[in-house]
Image 1: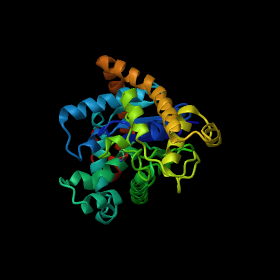
Image 2: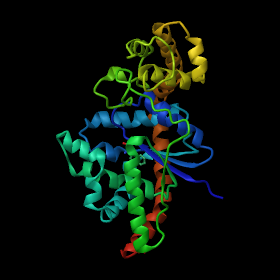
Image 3: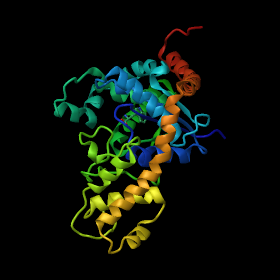
Image 4: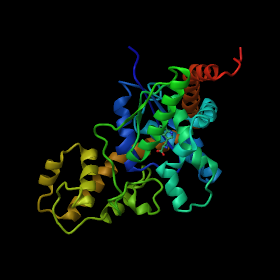
Length: 332
Ligand code: TRP
């Protein structure tokens, strides 16, 4: 039996955070044996906001290096840049003709941007979910690991696929959102009700994978806590402390009970330093390996070229089927 297929993507805007690692990449590592996985660096989604070209290029390569440094095996997984596989754009145009204005108008991410009156409200922001649907459907993906905030986009992807299939017959696998069992969602250190984000306005709230040990320590020392003075897991009443416990548990493998016992009567200061130290040790090898990988651009190039070639080969039969079904003349 062939393995189930997983597709996921992260935009190369902003630096990857401890939240990206614990909430997403770490889970990907556990999936690589059991599933056939494609991990795409979605640079075409990234240009829906303005980027300095040099920064976008640097971040894209850095993200690739970080994936490898975190333990994603480039042989077992297909790791590549979205812009290197033109079938994404081709299928996206086609699917756009099967996506309704009403559906796109309902996307909360889009509505939020309109409501905020963001400048540069371009058409790419509007059709962003269509490109995302193309990413997923191009590979007949079964499962799509995403956070809560992207579930609506996966729902839309399913609706588009179901619509297409009902017009032309079985063409696309209907994907499911996949929330991993240990899908710890890491929150901001300064605002523990919101997620730790790579595009946060407040860099003190996020720990970045490339942060120095010094800066990690400082950020944890400043982390928002509460007045309860006990290390207990209670996300409602003690969101800050619960977030620190989640981080510490991910970094050390200790359970919440063990953590509560370890810091019973010790005060938040001691606890914060212990969390910081565990994160420093967790991230040290990742940062060092990333730096090393970035020194050898030809090795990285081999990985992304290989990834794009494999992704393109997998995509081709789907695109051929789709174009046949809708009535384009075969290239021959
Ligand atoms: N929109 C996703 C995000 O912002 C990134 C993304 C693009 C993605 N294409 C995807 C995620 C396909 C999963 C599958 O997080």
